[in-house]
Length: 159
Image (cartoon, rainbow, N blue to C red):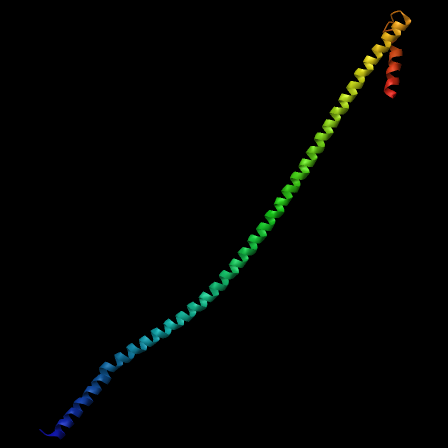
């Protein structure tokens, strides 16, 4: 065996192997690597977009929370105002009811005083007639002296 022919044969086999690999093995490997590289790049871009979308969503969520808090504060303020208005309305109603009751009681007292005065006037007139009849020592006719009694009643009313 000659080393030159062996070296030459091995060189040819090596070049055939390189050509075979370049023709049939290398393109699918490069394509697979390119596909993988594209997949990785797409994944990184999607992750970046997702991160940006998450930031936007967080900002929107913070905005919504802020709006909800302001609406809640407004609702609470309105409820407090309405509560104060209800309390004030109840106070006004109670005051009006108190005034009505007091006025009714005053009218009732006034009527009672008036009826008591009328009763007293009747009793005073009866006493006056009885006293006059005892003084005159004769019986006085009440029908005949009704004008005298009315004059006495008007004098008592004036007092």
